[in-house]
Length: 327
Image (tube, rainbow, N blue to C red; front, top):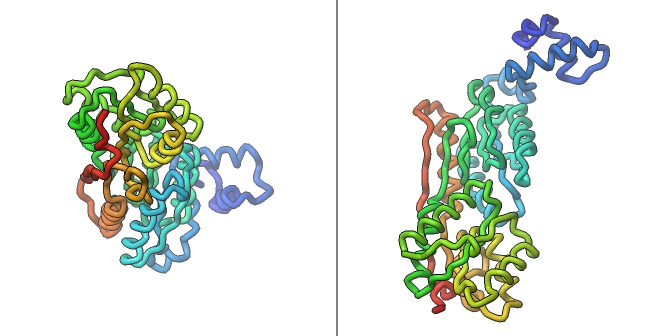
């Protein structure tokens, strides 16, 4: 606060009043203080009492897209297990794929002086984290990299997994393979689409833009895509679902379709092995993703100063039936 006061040309008491939204501060003065706060990256320290006693706040922050998605629920559980072993609790929030919400959550957790941040990024602008990282708050990105800063990142092999899915379908005789993905500005969706293109090239299949549908996966959007992709003489004989939500919406749409193509999903999901036919998937260990990210974070908390790391975890295809259907 003293640095903010010095830059703004006011007393520490005035800075305190502005930060705590107290009355009797002239608007021009408050504006100078806020500008200094923004310039210096100052955050109100809600855990100051703990820190003055020489202890940590005992918490880390985790920001995911949607805690209601089973993928992120499992990720959260994995992070909690590691955090518990280090004597920490986890504060979790959903960004809802909104970059402003992501920033709001991250900075709120930083204001509470969490010992570290794990974030599944919703946007591409992460410069707002630089002051926090310089102040000593370690940050690890999960499932997607940061957009414009260099930081620790833990990913899965999105590219290789989709190439494997295309290759698997090609080995079973499919040449007209469709790809249904999430919004293309999401890293995982873009990487899986890139893997689809590469898989087509490697297997001598002509990449056809008409067989690709990218966008926020809703029941209506996937239903309309299925009608288009399965219609006509050049219809797709196989479909790759770009993530677990796409796969679920796709299965619902196919329940009402006249013909059912072969199907491979990226991300396993609950009951996939009990459907008729059971769903072939490109699977990866979500718990391993959470464990790896949390362990990397706590290594930083404990003083690891090595250069930022990029960890890519393997995936594997689980053949169950739906991806082994002939054209």
